[in-house]
Image (cartoon, rainbow, N blue to C red):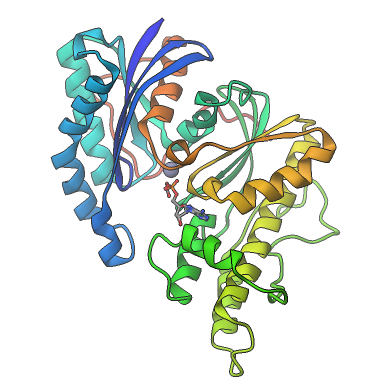
Amino acid sequence: MTRLLGIETSCDETSAAVISGTGDAVTLQSLVILSQDVHRVFGGVVPEIASRAHLTSIQPVVQRALDDAGVDGAALDAVAVTNGPGLVGALLVGVSFGKALAYALDVPLVGVHHMEGHLFATSLESADAVPPFTALLVSGGHTLLIDVEAWGRYRLLGRTRDDAAGEAFDKVAKLLGLPYPGGPHVERLAATAEAGAPRFTRPMLRRNQRPGDDDYYDFSFSGLKTAVLNAVHAPDGAAGRAAIARGFQDALIETLVEKTARAANAFDRRRVVLGGGVAGNRTLVAAMTERLAPHGVSVYAPGARLATDNAAMIARAGLFHIERGERAGLDLNAFATLTLPGLIAA
Ligand code: KG4
Ligand code: ZN
């Protein structure tokens, strides 16, 4: 049994968590997520402000995670910290704190790739969300379709060529005059649409695409955003805001669902696991389930706290690496871009 502290500061949440366990039998003992509300004023994350906010909250957030778990530092066996990808100044706060803590406690330290953390998140609450599975990670910064053959063995099948899915939601929200972050607002507005929502072209989704085509699994959302812009500014103002939100969300979701279904089918997977902030979209989860259930594929989505950026998923991914004997040195660095570990040929 290993008890591990996770730390996550890659973007605008300061988070710490304690887990304990072995292999996939893991108990989440505590999870603290402090979301930096300040960025709402600016309509997006301001990196320098994020770094400073992490600096003032990291110590109390870690202390609170230990208190909630009912342990003190001496009870920890290891420390895991996100060291990329993300905002480098923000990451450095967590990495520096993690290093100092591991050194002071004389326990192993491990660096975790933020997106590998998202792959593990759902398994903390759904015991069946374990490999092999097809993963769709959809957040504000990333859109990745991955075949997870085993923990640590990942086939990167598709990614966005421009905007991430969450970024598209945020930009469309702005066009519709909704607050940041826009995803939940767009979802709510779309739910109020009457019949007759505009049908936007499904980006990179064509019937005659074949496995091996370089756009078979890839995504692109910037054209869809432009189509929304044009609809908002249409001279007759034909479609209302709710209808436009609905048309946008339908197009984006159908693209995500179809490409995920292609991947699950190609690798004959029985499970699909969602991750990232957009996985909090109930309409997406319902559409994915409806599309895949008839094929005997189960869909797993994380609850709100594990969908968004959190340290529990970092601790869980860190446990996997610690159990494999991996250790980071005190020269562990933070990286704005970082290759997912464990990639195997698609
Ligand atoms: O994973 P996350 O919390 O942060 C990172 O980007 O890493 O994802 C945040 C993104 C934002 O773009 C937000 O608008 C989107 O997730 N989001 C949603 C929903 N809830 C959050 N998008 C669509 N529908 C939602 N219900
Ligand atoms: Zn994330």
